[in-house]
Image (cartoon, rainbow, N blue to C red; front, side):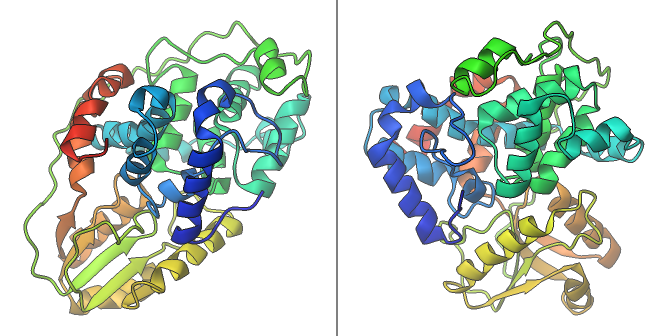
Length: 378
């Protein structure tokens, strides 16, 4: 399975999916046809998670060809990423607690067997191999995988979420962490997701049959409560000559940006990451960044080491908001340490959409039309 490494290629992939597969998406989307056939899904998440193309851009293209009622399921799947980001923005302590939890979890023999695909469950072992080789898994398979990890193998959900983040091209702090919490039954408290053998058999077209699983598991319990935090970001009109961008916000085309003297694009190294990326993930990010440099020649790619001396000379920056996660934690620490002033640039679409993430997805879904109308997506 090969992913494009350019914005142009991502848009071509989107156009092709709209023309050939979108009309049948709702009927075919739950089938995992194997590692070499993902034709029934769009596979756009590696680009959307880096904002090489945005959720809103995808939606506008889709709705230019189809009425919403015809493609409602696909659009909702796209907007799950918007919802998850907004949910985490309103409850950032969930991310902090997840990172803190990881420090105290032992990597025992059962964990090592799981990440090496050496369990007694054939389909799980195959998915471990596929994840490591392709850096992607079908969404339905991710749910099965997480359920087996948590309820059959009885491993900590946090280590499973970490394992995905290490290997996925589309690893995203919000979508990944909160999806694992949802499967575990602590995102929507008391409601977990259970993988069933019949379901795996049906939606893999009987590639895996008679899988022995724990199908009667009760939800995990996490008594921590997370109150809503109002979005408190700085929206001042900046007069800076210097812009900070991170690798998960690469789409500069759709930003109303002035001319900057310098664009510092930061890709954190594994030396300071709490979750260490596999080399293929870092290489993929570098390739995406190089593609953007073709259009924005002022981009300077750097890690935290190269960025440090810049902050000793320059104290005021505009910054495209990287959202809650490792990048934001890093720049927040730098801000405090070096007394920086950061003027945050937040997409108008995100700012408007995130207000509907205060409750469950059902509430968010009921407000999607408002987002369409606000930004002329339909």
